[in-house]
Amino acid sequence: MNLKQSIKTLFICAMVFAGLTAFALQADAAGELDKIKEAGKIRIAVFSDKPPFGYVDENGENQGYDIYLARRLAKDLLGDENKVEFVLVEAASRIEVLQADKADLVLANFTVTPERAEQVDFAKPYMQVALGVASPENAPITDVSQLAGKKLIVNKGTTADAYFSKNHPEVELIKYDQNTEAFNSLRDGRGVGLAHDNTLIFAWVRENPGFVTGIDFLGSLDTIAPAVKKGNKELLDWLNAEIEQLYQEKFFDKAYEATLKPVYGDSVDPKTVVVEGKIQ
Amino acid sequence: MLDSVASIFLSGRNMSRLMEGLAVTLEISVISVVLSMLLGIFVGLAMTSRNRLVLAGTRIYLEIIRVMPILVLLFLFYYSLSKIWGINLSAMSVAILVFTLWGTAEMADLVRGAITSMPRHQRESGRAIGLTESQINRYIIIPQAVRRLLPGVINLTTRMIKTTPFVFFINVPDLVKVGQQIVEITGMRNAMASFWVYGLIFLIYFIICYPISCFSVYLERKWES
Image (cartoon, rainbow over all chains, first blue to last red; front, side):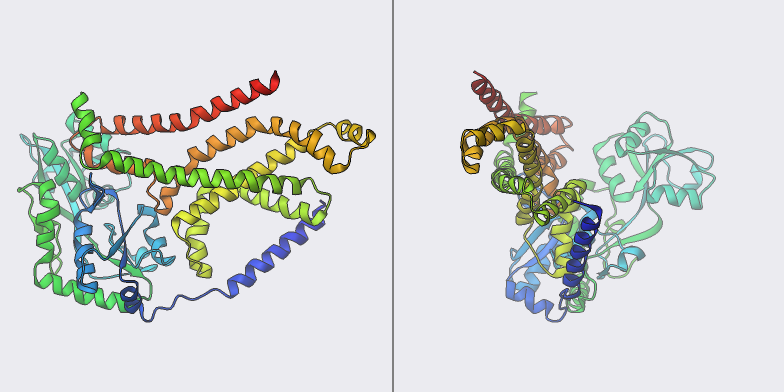
C-alpha cells in the first residue's frame, strides 16, 4: 500500500465521520419528566465505594447519604422508592454519564464548582463541605491562631492545602500525597494537627481514640448538590421544588441521623455537614 | 485470624456478590474471546489477500485499534457514541463490542503472521504435485499455521481476561470492582480486608488463566511428538 492510497483512504474515513456527525441527534430536553415516568424508573448515578455517602453494603444493596436522598426522590416522583436504577460511577465519569444520557441525575457527592457548572446544571445543595482540623486530645487545636509558626499536616492539592497556603502563610505546612501517609504522620506527632475535608476528619477521629476534631468548620464553603444534564430544565425545576420541600420537613437531618451519624458519632454537629434551607 | 477472614467473606451476601462479579467478568471474556477467534481468522485471511482495498481497510482497522488504549475505546463507544450520534448502547454490550474489536484485530494479525511466515516453497511444492489452491490451504498451510498460532492465541486470551477489569470505568461491576466495594465497607473495622479480598481475586484469576496455559503446553507437546 503506498502513501497516496493511505491518505486517500484516511480522507474517505474522515468524510464519513464528518457526515455522520452532521446528522448528530440533539437530545430532546422537553418532556424529560414524562420520559422518566414512562420508563417507570429514574436512573441515578451514585458511588459504589465511598462510604458513608454512596456504597454497596454486604447484601449488595446501595446505601449511604446520597442513596437515602435518591430513594426519596424516586418515591416522590414515581410513587415507589424502589423505582430507581443505580448507575455506579467513578468520580471522573460523573459529568460524562449525564452528557451521554446514561443517567438522569447524579447524586455522587458532587461538589459544585464554576467549571463543573458550565457542563452540568446543579440543583439546590443538600450538603456542605468545609475544612476540619484533627489534633491530639491532650493538645487540641481549637483555633487557627494556635497554628501560627507550628507544623500542620495537609494533603497536596487539596482544599486544605490551598486554603492555608493562601490565607494563613504563617502556618508551616507538611504535605503528603496519600491520606494514609498524612494520618500516620499525625499519629507519629510530626505536626500539631491535620487539616482535611471535615467529613473525612470526623470519620477518622471517631476510629482513632486519642484524637479530637478541634476545629470542625473552617475555610471557604463548598456545597454538594444533585446535577442534571445541561439544559434539562424540567427535571432541574422539579428537583429544586422538591429539595425546597425537603428542607421544610427537615429531611436532610433525618438523612444525617440515618446514614452519617453512625459513622461520625454524637460529638459532631450536623449543621457542619447538612444543608437545611439556607447555607451557613 | 481465620475469624476475621471468615467475617469478610461470610457476612451478608459478600461471597455470592463476588461470584456475580466473576460471572460478569467471565461473560465478557468468554463471549469476546470466542468472537475474536472466529472473526480474527477471517480478517487475518483477508489481510493476506492481494486486493488493495481489502488490504487498506484491514490495515487501517488494525492500526486504529492498536494505537488506541482500551480505556479510550471503552469511553468512545460508551459515552461519545451516545453524546454525538445518540446511539445509546448498554455498558455490557459496549464492553463486549470493544473487547471483540480489540481481540479480532490482534487475532487477525496473528493469523496473518502465521500464514505469511510459511515458506513459499510449501505452497509451490503443493502446486507441483497438482493440488488445488484450496487443497493446499487445507492440507498444508492451515495445519501448520494453527500450530504457529497457538502460543500467540493463548497469550491473547489471558491478556483479554486480565484486561476486563477496565470495564468498571464504564460502570460495569466486575469481579475487581465488587472486591473494591467490599474492601471499602469492611476496611474500617478490618485492616487486613484488602489483603484477603484481593488475595482471593488473584486466586480466581489464577484458576481461570493457569489451565489455559497448561492446555497450550499440552497441545504443543502433543503436536511435537
